[in-house]
Image (cartoon, rainbow, N blue to C red; front, side, top):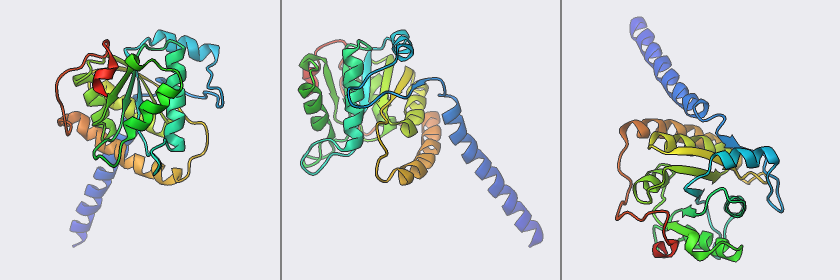
Amino acid sequence: MKKLRKICLSVFIVVLAVLAGSCLFVMGSTRGKIVAGVTSDTISFTEAQQQALAAEKADCILVLGAAVKPDGTPSAMLEDRLAVGVALYKDGAADKLLLSGDNGSVEYNEVKAMKNYALAHGVAAKDIYLDHAGFSTYESMYRAQAIFGVERVIIVTQTYHEYRAIYDAQRLGMQAAGVSADQQRYSGQTGRDLREVMARIKDFFKCIAKPLPTYLGEKIPIDGDGRQTW
């Protein structure tokens, strides 16, 4: 029994080390790829940030979905992502917006709320691409490359999420940088931070196996008219 306990303890330590190491690897391999500290209100970028983004001239700005309110408008977290994405578009970081979210049912539609926000804030209709099947970070990245042909991408989400999003994009064959959309402290963030640890571990192994997303489909090049995706 004593020998068995030692074996079990050793296995537990090895498994824990592998899990912790995979999480740290996801974060470490994406450091230096995130532009943070974007100011709130009239979203603006410092000169250094603008230079960094100019060097990353991308095929598109990919804004990742988040919860919408019962009335169909963006939650605070999603609205901040959209505000930063629109500001990047207007500053010329990329000519197209790719809005990726969950539209898994008629009753729930993140991308419609995202599209309406972008239109209301001056983004040209033809420059707005919608990915209705972005059911997870991994699937959003997979479909960005496989369906829309994205090779260089600027990803907009909150910092805690950026590490995994950039990691997934890189492992799926894209050159990726991120711009953090943190503009406030979001309700329930401690829980998100804890869940994100497990999500990083999950995506570390997903990016090794590279499973297909829930849906694929015909290719829709990102350099055309985005209205065909509506």
